[in-house]
Length: 112
Ligand code: FES
Image (cartoon, rainbow, N blue to C red):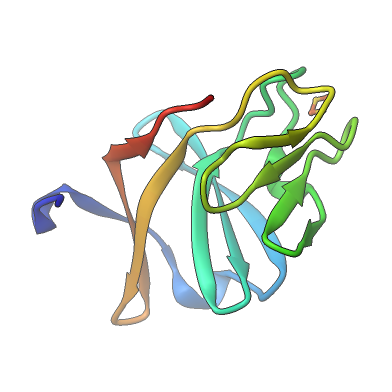
């Protein structure tokens, strides 16, 4: 389990709308934060197919679709569910407390 000091603030809770993603940057990493069905997810904001910003894709049923060619990814695991992307997206541990959203850059789930 990650130590508290490894979580870093990335956004205010009020910046995230239900059912939508938004792009952020933290220490040179492009991160998409998505609020969906009461949870917040943090994934790399870079589609592995052709580098589109995933943050602007449609969100539905626990998945986000790339806005360019509609590859689908599982929000919780980052796994690719349909092409044309050939692999998944890295996800990050995320938490929300005191009106702030924090992520842990070290606590990731590798892509598959
Ligand atoms: S850039 Fe994402 S599916 Fe093509």
